[in-house]
Image (cartoon, rainbow, N blue to C red; front, side, top):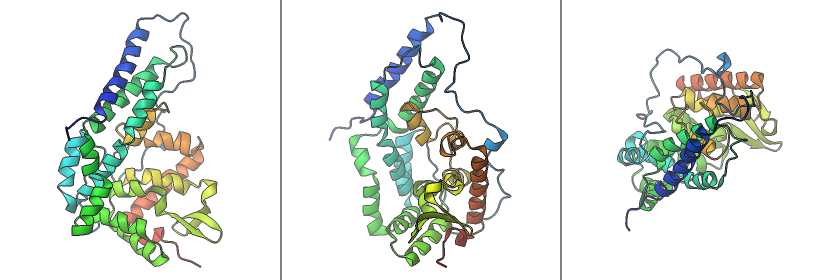
Length: 312
């Protein structure tokens, strides 16, 4: 099959659409003095938005692999390199980026279909969308159709069935496949021992969500709360990978995708956690920040039982 860039054409065209619009609007002087309109600017950073300071250096868990952290500056080069390093979790990391990049084509279509009204959308927001799109292009625009198949999670799983070479992928598979309470507890401990931030990010809320006769609930460190109440612990799982070393700032792939799809453009996960996940509730957000720090400290200390619910 000829190597053709599956996403590159659409991404480049969409970038041109945005920058073309900016060039036109920049030449049109405002009819009235600028007003202080509601802004879609990047959320301001307050003291509560700061991640907790890193703890004193300590020895990582013995099984922890070398980090191949997402998001990379150049996606395809990262995938080729990571795939060849399964012992460091490379297949899991590579296939995770492939999975995330598969959604960018749809986001590009949404951006191309949008026809912004110059009077309704401030140019600053469009510029942020274009910048997000440029970052997406570097991460995802060079993959071919063959790449999306060759380095997919399915392909990684087929290799893992043969050689069991990727400890991060293996931990993910066991956690997802666990059906009994005993298997779930063992898989949770394995995930936390590996302590890979990309894996923790991929599993997300599943790490702390359980179900019994009363319904679904979240559990951490002896405390449980119904999922329907959107407890702070759920938001904490969104911030936890950042405390473990994941890059959660302006290159965060999920935030870039949301921005270029027409949603808010945030500087990092903290802004979205406060504005959207906590609904602007500063107290709930502060609780989530604190719980995320407690979770990270428990993982580093090997206190995995704090994540494991025991039936009364």
